[in-house]
Length: 117
Image (cartoon, rainbow, N blue to C red; front, side, top):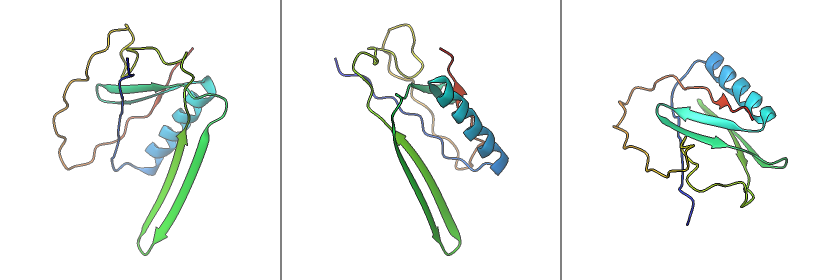
């Protein structure tokens, strides 16, 4: 059976100090061996191997700047367990509940939570 695709997206305006706290939590999670990205009821737990692909992009045009950090990797087949996605840890695969459309106003981002092994 094909593994369920899980995705959590956060697109919000936040203060720089919140971004710093988010990145610090991300570093703690990476050091611990796994990270959980959570937004509301939706969550995804990622467990990177020792080697990951890292892409960094920085752009500046007139009055707009952009910085992108992307980490990617392929999991070993034995690591991925069927039905273990989107915060579901009991082995039962369920489709995530439909999420109502959010207002145009951006809300503060939630920091990733380190997952302890």
